[in-house]
Image 1 (spheres, helix red, strand yellow):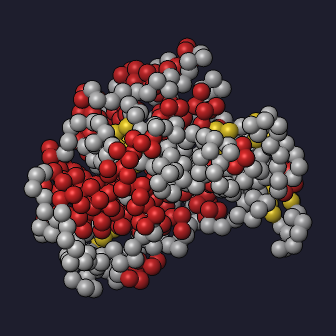
Image 2 (cartoon, rainbow, N blue to C red):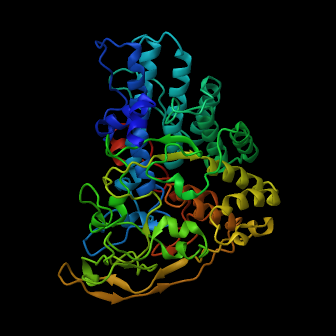
Image 3 (cartoon, rainbow, N blue to C red):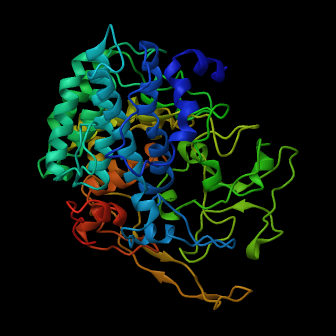
Length: 554
């Protein structure tokens, strides 16, 4: 059973689960909080202390999947619904966020909490506050690699940020802001130095922790995005890092994509760096509540009521899938939904009230969507009896398919399309078992543009009720056609979307392929503003630290 596994192997995973509730909210004083020096630590405290440093990754991945990397992309949105949700998620779709938009700035506090916690444990070890008789340098290397992983996400989201590697700082200390390139270089240096001291074994004792292979995956991500982060591509270095993982023989492709996201996925052969979740010991993986309506609690016999049904797949993205691609069926709920007894789920709100819940690949626009509009997200397995606000599926920040696709992308960009075709075909084979011929792809095909039909697709409605009920719907179509054939290596971007949808990475991929600011989708009109490739530094942080300068354009 999963709960037994996580209670025994390793103890770190248990602490991650137990400590999540207390660590979910970012610390407002992450630069100056000093640990009480009166506690009598022992070496047995190391697992607990390590867990405290890893725990913030839990809220980071939840935010990546549900907010920062996803609903701002051409993959998913949160439209206005009959039950009234039309908050800041609208700004995410339109790319009109500000330094006060929660979905755009929430990661800042979570990531600096992780950095602060890692710095604290490093300080406790180096000062002798926590006695470590064996493996001191290994623990320090692990913590520095972990800290670098938080800085990686800050580099991706905000670019120019405060950089701090000390914990014992004086009262009132304010860290200096460094450039995105300087941050990039610091991350690579720290991970490279830590790597030889990290464990090579992949087993229960290292699950959920940084190993050499997690460090190589982190380096690969930095090199893959180096042109965005620094202006200089590092394709060959990315390939080298990926090859270290591939040649280790410690990972493999899962037989099906579905098993990677199952509720009991801790034994998955693809897991390189995992963030553990368990509904019995922590809240955290809150995906169900984001994407499904309350009546689905009855469909899955969940332990508590939940679900506000906000997120929906963008129809243009869904239209890129081949109908025989099993990822389309496995990753999304569509069609008539039924209860366990076979009866139809019925809609409970809006103009669809009392009608069958027949989910269709249609979203009228950002301003209005009914319960059945837009395929519902279901990549992470929903199971009967789960806690909808605390699912047990572990999240793999780095997984083996990603490593293969990073290598493939770099090979494609350096003129080896036929080699790329072999890798992509291998990955596609598990998605086209019902029609194996469709799994094969050629190098020439991967050199083509995207099949995504970009452009505005608001089909009919704008809400205009003057604050009164009932809601009035006014036809107001906005339809343009921009296509995707002009996107360099766009077909490979399509492959990334088909494989990695709902994993909190689409924004990063779109930026790297030059689509983020240049294309329109659904109600989002192309901004043509390169400044939107970075999120704004939160206004509250600017007010606290006078050394910070806001990112351009905000």
